[in-house]
Image (cartoon, rainbow, N blue to C red; front, side, top):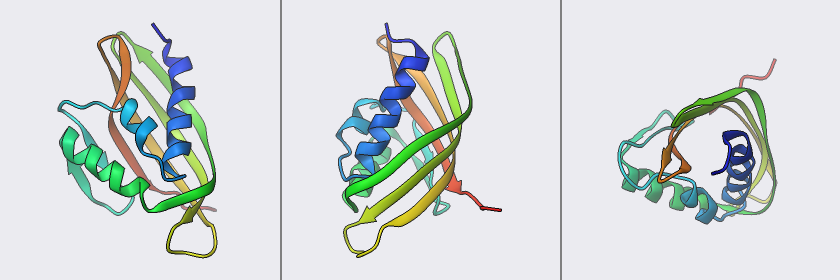
Length: 132
């Protein structure tokens, strides 16, 4: 069984794949049964595992390879079958329809639960970081 700390490395790699146009690794670490939610940087609230995963697939398709991405974890933890991390996702992404890379720094809170012994993402809240 993977520790939560080890899993967070896998989660960060899935995030990098996502911002390079590949939703597969993110879908691999996400729940496929309810409950599941995303509070997106746009202000949208997405509810339901199927809708969340379809949205993630569509979202990844807007990106092109060449991203820089890292998690700046401010704190994280797990207890039994629940885990979380919160912090900043710092990214420079390439959108398929834009010629120049775009900096996207997001405040993140993610929640995970164990499903058949594996950590799975079931909630993500992200919004734009206001730089000082």
